Amino acid sequence: PPRAGFPTVILMGLDSSGKSTLLYTFQKGEVMKTTPTIGFNVTTLNVDNNTSLTVWDVGGQSKMRVNWRYYLEGCNVLVFVVDSSDRARIREADKALKVILSDDNMKGVPLMVLANKKDLPNSMTIREVCKQLDLPRYKHRAWEIQACSGLEGLGLRQAFLSVAKLVK
Ligand code: GDP
Image 1 (tube, rainbow, N blue to C red):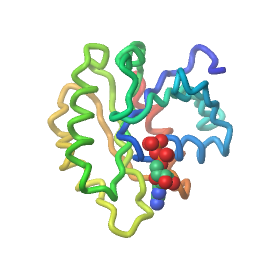
Image 2: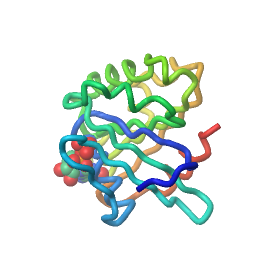
Image 3: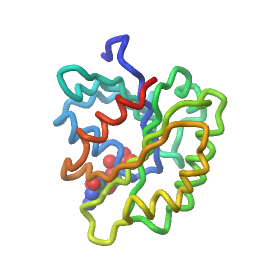
Image 4: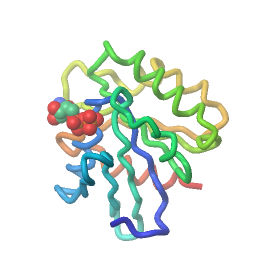
């Protein structure tokens, strides 16, 4: 079980954006799965010797728990995963992010966008994802965007180190 005291990271994003894959890759298979009725993963990521994060994988937007807002309470950083190869759903991702960030619990909470699946040949650059999600509009919070491949494990450690640095 996650130990108390580590910064709490909420991992969100549309279904199939690659949330469980990147957690699984990063942990080399140690992700703790809870029962299907509860339906979310919670894990402690040991990013490096000095850095650990408690990560809640709350699930994809379309199959999100009715009470997903409950998980936002006490969130230190939001990590929002985007499938950067999926141009057809980038508007949907944008809308989902907007809804999450408009929650009262998310006021001032820093945001890390992970432009995932960068290994795919036609994936959008971080510049393009940034534009599609109009990240500069989030003026009143710290935000960052990084590319990664959860499947190949590229950029994950760097991304979570940056996530840890975003914690106030
Ligand atoms: P989740 O619903 O957000 O947890 O998404 P999953 O982790 O289940 O991933 C959805 C699909 O995308 C799976 O078929 C994964 O193998 C694939 N996938 C996830 N991450 C990557 C990635 O970085 N690159 C590629 N090419 N495929 C990925």
